[in-house]
Image (cartoon, rainbow, N blue to C red; front, side):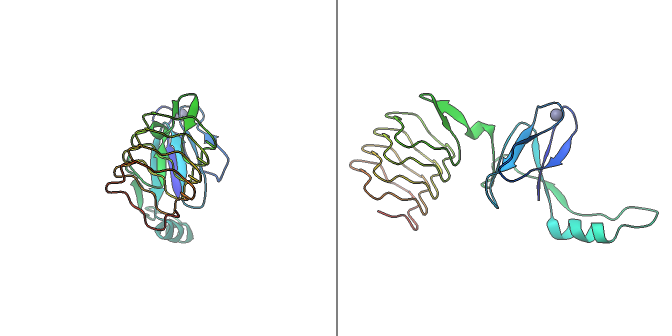
Length: 181
Ligand SMILES: [Zn+2]
């Protein structure tokens, strides 16, 4: 279970699916974008170890000391919990997980280390773009123009590249597990 803690107002709250939730001061907010993946802005993400939390709930003592459960501070770099650093504007497009970037013109854009998990980049122009280390897992890149793009170290697991142009693209160290061509 993922929660978000605001350092300014001390609110600690759980995140809902597909519905952005903020703390009382507005300094922190986030949501789940699917069963596993959450995005947030501001604040510190906290995880409750579900089993241990439920056990503590079931065993609430009548008195005396409380029943301990396990919680942890989620790392800054977490594949299933990405913060606002990963969301940025490039050429007027908001670059973030699950973004709809169909037909976007991102020619020569610097998208290094961007989180593009499940984005729609169908028919997008990424010619000569720098995509070093980007996460394009499950992304839709059908008919995208990736000519001479730098995809070194990118994650293209389960991505769809059917009809995409990858002439002259740098595919060194790219994860192509399950990628469709
Ligand atoms: Zn706050």
